[in-house]
Image 1 (cartoon, rainbow, N blue to C red):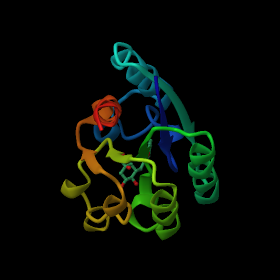
Image 2 (image 1 turned 90 degrees about the vertical axis):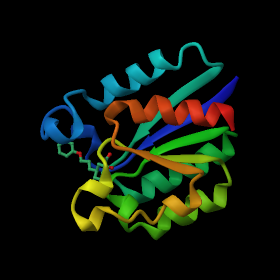
Image 3 (image 1 turned 30 degrees about the vertical axis):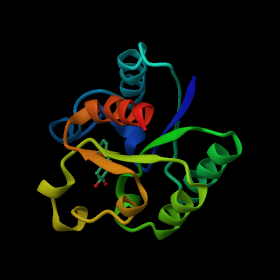
Image 4 (image 1 turned 60 degrees about the vertical axis):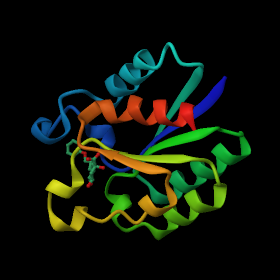
Length: 143
Ligand code: CA2
């Protein structure tokens, strides 16, 4: 059975409470439960982590390495656009990562168009709301 970790970054703990037109009306908890349901037929064990702190996200990535996770789905939130430290951690651990975003970052403000973590991830899925999470898990199961 593959072990997959879902990592969520800053402000995603507040999902479902504001800006539903951009991010949908589900809470992060709803999205994780939805992802587990959607992936129930896959041979996969899913764990989830959220933090508003860059260093805690980096610590979690190294824990994923120590605990031999097979893949990571990461929505690093706004850190995606500028955290070289998270990029370096993803690159060091050599666990296949899929970057996800609920919104289509390319259709939004220009400062969201670039992600500094994309190049060290297997690929990026964005713009399909909560569906990006099970899609990310599915891709990792097939790698
Ligand atoms: O579309 C995504 O998933 C993002 O990663 C979400 C980040 C944003 O900075 C990225 O550019 C794209 C922000 C998450 C903010 O979440 C909120 C949730 C509820 C209310 C307000 C913000």
